Length: 368
Image 1 (tube, rainbow, N blue to C red):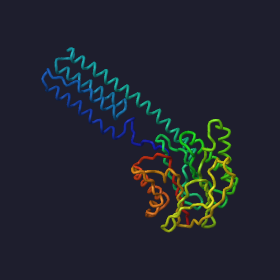
Image 2: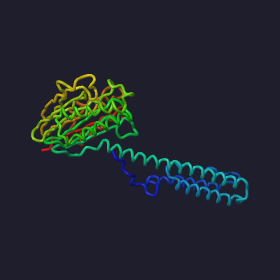
Image 3: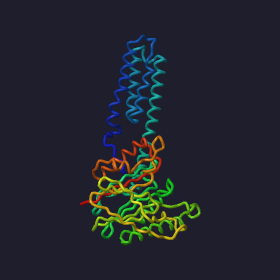
Image 4: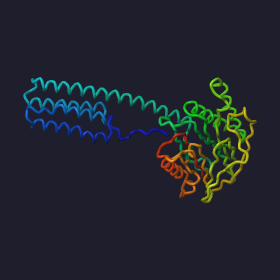
């Protein structure tokens, strides 16, 4: 999720931009040569303004100023060879070229300054978002993990979807969830839920205990931070919380109204639906708190895929949903990161690169 630095940028210009400087230089040279060989009544000097104007589209203010100065120098040369610099026509052309080159350079400088500020803001935003949604480690306990997060907001790195993993006594505990809604409110709820999940890891709560703790945290937050603005019966978080135990090929799961995980076992895909699912987190006004644990086998060689509804509800041009179980069954094999890359590329092909909702995928494989 971190924005990588532009290692090709040298002195404010990229290597590709430097190659483009040949275009305005050719324009200056061509206009100068043609004008010098043209009759005195033909004036091509005004075309020189194209050189700094084009340069501003790919270079910084410094490069634009240099090209503008070269264009003015070329206009001076043309004036000297066509009657001297005292003629009103050449003086007007030189003055106009200086003014327009200066304006173009100033606009480019203002644009570069705005971009630098925007880059700084984005860097801070990405750092803050990584604190809220830390990248999952490649290995936790006896599990190998890979994850993918696609935010619906192009300017954001995270949204209302969430995932996290912690170590507990004898197991690796994971959560994946989806906050109802979008925007800053959803990001705040997601960060609160992740904080409650991580913060209680040292207490070694049972699986129902951790779910109850997260439910209480969400309800408390909604009551004491936005009770006059939120409609509580419509505010909730769907989530799957599971423990993958170290000492046996089993795992326990509590599903709170979330899309069921998929288990890939010996080439066959099974949907891990629970017999008695719990209600989403934050709906204590609708039901008593009861979080039954569903046990299932998770053997060496199996792959477990957790996901949010933004994946399975992604549509193609015809309106068809993304067929995650079928695409998972067609996978040729590999590690968790290979599967995440495969699903990422396949999902983008299905949606033509457009994600209309936050989407998250977590792939888990048991180590030997």
